[in-house]
Length: 369
Image (cartoon, rainbow, N blue to C red):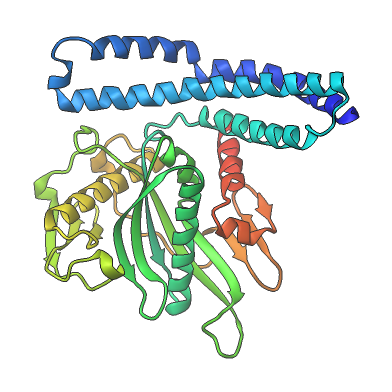
């Protein structure tokens, strides 16, 4: 029964952490804001302003989720402590496996909640828009880009986020040349902004008949979704050139083979975005505007610029020396982040979306600086 005494010690040690977390989450202020927003939503005429009512309801949902998440964490602590006492009183060690599982889940949720308190950036709470670009290298690089596309889709699924495909261009023989998705959920951008950069793959290529080892590169751009009415990121008609073209068939059955695809060019910066996955020209245009606002916002934040007019178009170099992370399948298995030095040998778990270790290491590094 020594294990249960040890877990009681771990739980006692975790108790002060819960109190610190309560303060970091600013739960008292959150509860007060919930009451104010609920009172506002009950006032006459509140629902007449659709845009404002939607913003209020979204904010309410976010605040309630934060409060309820912390309450569930505290309830889990109480349940585990009670479980330890019961096991010790009854001399029953059959509950040890259940306790071990619950404690691991408790620890992971507490750490995730702690990291969420580090997300204080202007756009951290927003949805995330991810764009994938294959580097030089033809089929090999395009296959690598599709592997990354799958990896982030699986990460989103693990966290209960929704994924919307905004653009997709198939590779020549396999994989993809480029693709854009939106990952919808609280703090999606805050967590995923660490993934912005060039990702390097080393493996024996399945496309090389001689079985030689290849190095491939693909870029992942991570941008926050920006609301159309955000006055900080305003798109002026005079600054945009629109081109309409026929969808090329990329994305399989997702596209319509009519001239519904849209490409937008932002003249001041040279930024180009496109969308062809929707059947409607207007839907593809809306996708493009969302992507353009997101890209401008990401550059503004990353470069610490005061206004959008300060932005200059910068093309990410998808090549050796510019990578943020290396994925090695052969001659050994290793994924290593070159900024934080965080690494793991379980490469297949990473490719299945287990990225939290890398994300947590990046957020902790930023918080310490």
